[in-house]
Image (cartoon, rainbow, N blue to C red):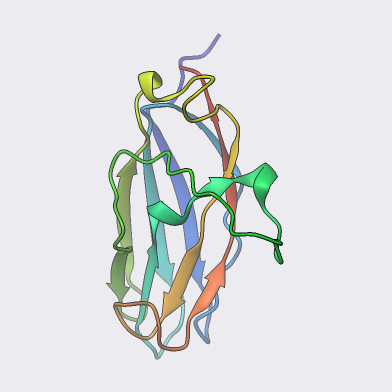
Length: 144
């Protein structure tokens, strides 16, 4: 059996006009580093791209129009209420480096080994509020 990966690389591309191409669904294990490798393919405009780890939810709980607020489940050890963001000039590639919580944070009454949904946003400002283009890809966390 091949060894488990210690880093998951997630390729994110900004297309001309500031929209994000859907990154591939990925699988990783608890404690794994997650590196979002972001490239701006817009030849003219700079953009900010970020994600707020505190907004991560179980993919099974996702409903675009829920009757009640969805409970957040942040599996990232690095993070907090602020978005993790980078500014990219035309043609730039940058990385947002995060890490998942350790195995001890997962279990029956804790975080679940399951699929999660997170939100990536490209925008014209660091707060990700001017001309935002959100995208909601997913990933799955497995035991180490």
